[in-house]
Amino acid sequence: MKKPMKSFFTQCARPQGFLGRIMLRFMNFGHAPLTNWGLSLLDFQDKWTMLDIGCGGGATLKRLLKRSEGATVHGIDISAEAVAKAKKVNARALGKQVFVIQGSAEKLPYPDAMFDLITAVETVYFWPDLPNCLQEVYRVLKPGGSFAIMVEVLDGTSIWTEIVDGMTVYSPDELLTLLNSAGFTHTVIHRKKPSYATITCRKP
Image (cartoon, rainbow, N blue to C red; front, side, top):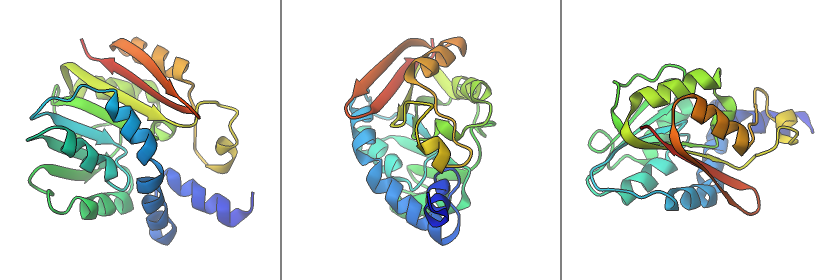
């Protein structure tokens, strides 16, 4: 692939600068079908406290807020460009029901047992030391709370791993095994054509 295209798609990992801003707009639009389907699998309750890890351009935060009346929604992303975009997209609710910060899944800056639901849309490919990150998710999730991972690239031999630097693809079965090892229960793989998968689980 030509260098300009590779430079653009590598922005998936940590959007920066002009190309990063374009990528964030692309993510908000391109991830919508997967996200809407994945969220439809969850049984939302009112007044939930929720977290989207790797919140990107902030579209998922808006979708979460619409599904739980009186909810509080937090977003975290390693990219300062993403945080700025997510804040702009959620400007009306920012500081009231929506809170967005910069940070990593490696060390989530939240207290234990804070969230009813945690989501991760097209982002676990870039989490360093995935087992440790899953332990962090487990820590900040309430007992009985749910975690949903949504992915579109399911095969480690995918061309995307050659295009996007720092990308590691896990099959749904690999993610299920890792989640079970982290202590999650009720782990289920949901699939939808052409290549969507959502893995849902709970903290006991």
